[in-house]
Length: 234
Image (tube, rainbow, N blue to C red; front, side):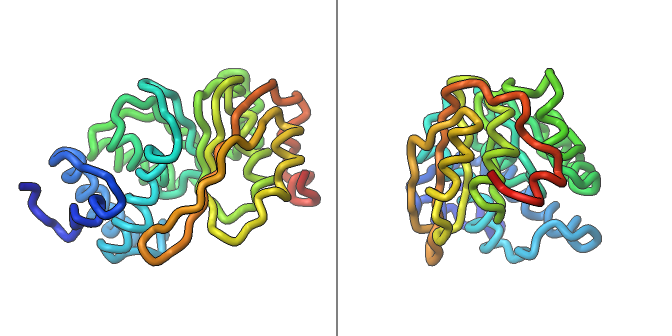
């Protein structure tokens, strides 16, 4: 039996996920360190263990239910913040190859320390997505790009799709109310096609996952620079 440290295994079972003792222990370590670090550096407004479990960990790992992720796939988490969704996903699926990208160095510092504590491997990039995706070593180099952000679908697509290799996928984690179809033109311009949209319940809240398949190369002019992006979305 897995001991309960404030993170209930039954919560995972309620959404059809099964944890090993090792995965559970790493998530507990993650939760404890996040709360501790958050006292000095603002990483999340969610600090209650049950809420961390539901709104961060379970929501992140649910990607494995709705997206087909082959073994040893490479992921870049764009604007990863405190590591969601990709660090819980890496804990649950240790085979994936993880790159964490964020524009704030204080978050990258947290993630380095976190991954050291969790004994998981990852690459850390401090920079803006629109700049990093122009670099040859990162452009169209990943099987998957993920983002969990409040930005609209068109903006997220411009920041994330350039990282994805042809045949790969961009997975956007969204709230329930956005009209995703407003981002279809941007997705197409960037070489993608929306192949799946899933609306699901996360306990008492609604969620949406959008999966974009990369079907052709992203034109070199995208992403635009930050001032152009702020001025007008695609």
